[in-house]
Length: 231
Image 1 (spheres, rainbow, N blue to C red):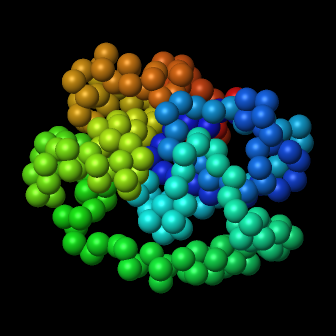
Image 2: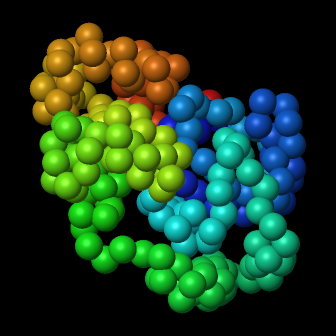
């Protein structure tokens, strides 16, 4: 199964059979960083997964964990959390995960800026990636260089790179819900220069053409379309 990129960081807890990415075994608990390309998951049997999704700027700010890999194993406290939720019901597992995250909140709040001008990543997210980087810098009262540094510190990438992921994600989700949407209309709606620009970006992030993705979506049951996983 291929997992496609998006604009979120996720913590994944795996239970059951072993899971692999490109033939390398995955740890039972890990953080999936912002992806540039799809990665392929495989398992030989039944696999149960619980995931926790974070905004791109939120994971490191909350947990203090710096991600430098596509898939990064998490430390002992997360492994202990996994052991504590393995044999409980879904509602209890969610409650235990929330309690675990609350332990990070008081320390993280001291470093969080409440002023929207100090959170350019959040402003970019609110725009859906549809804002010129120069305008974003002006809105934040920052130079272009200062904006780039803030993004690198908070997200690990440039604002333009995150904006590209956001726009890809919007197109992907739109096609998941409405597979017959016209590609040119999508390009115009989501700020691409033309259909060719959209096609290049979509192929870059998904390793699929728009037509190939559309065909896959047509044959998937509606409840599965938003799982961003494809055989």
